[in-house]
Amino acid sequence: MPSRLALYLSALVYPGAGQFCQRRRLAGIFYALFFSAAFIMLAVTIFRPIFANLRIAMDLAETGRADEFHRISFGAVFGWLGVSAAVYLAGLLDTWLAYRRGCRRGASSAHAALKDMEKSLEQK
Image (tube, rainbow, N blue to C red; front, side, top):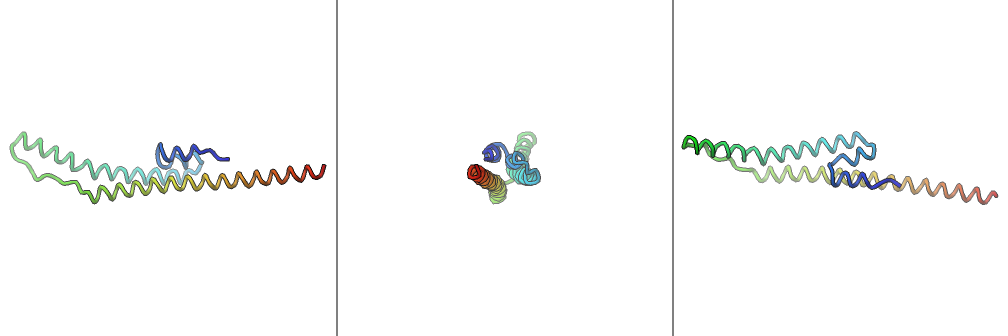
């Protein structure tokens, strides 16, 4: 029976960590890279206007004149948040499906072992 550690790693540590635990490195790299990229874009979408507005406010305090303030695009924020959540959930689903396949494989090998034991007992 496979361990649930991979599920916990994907859910609680980082997307892709569970795939690495399952020794599926390519899938782990895929989910880790895409989640990282989406999360970085989310952070850039949020923090770039904040820091630009901070610079403008400091210029206003220093010189008395300022450019127009930047607005945060909530559409872009929710878009990147949605992409991040979709990659996170897809990685978690992928880890769970691999776990289920491992459970089925373990069950079928246990079933085959039981059959072998029955045959050996019948022969005695």
